[in-house]
Image (cartoon, rainbow, N blue to C red):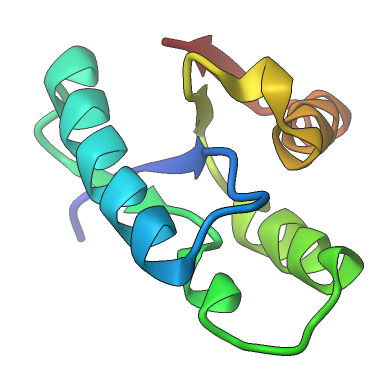
Length: 103
């Protein structure tokens, strides 16, 4: 089995539509792949959970934490400091001992 570097993408989602979130994730994913220059990489995020309607922030944050478990790296979008969920992702990465990379 090949090893894939598992990378969690931390991107602000507050006050954005599902379409905006998906578009932002596509763009961010492209940049991350270019910057990391890893051949075997698996990008993960909590995008799918934001497609579920009627859930509160705590629900989404728990899902992010579960997805982040087992990641090798968390990459933060340049404006991460403006989003509560990204700051929480940063704290979770610290608690779980996951490497962090800031764009």
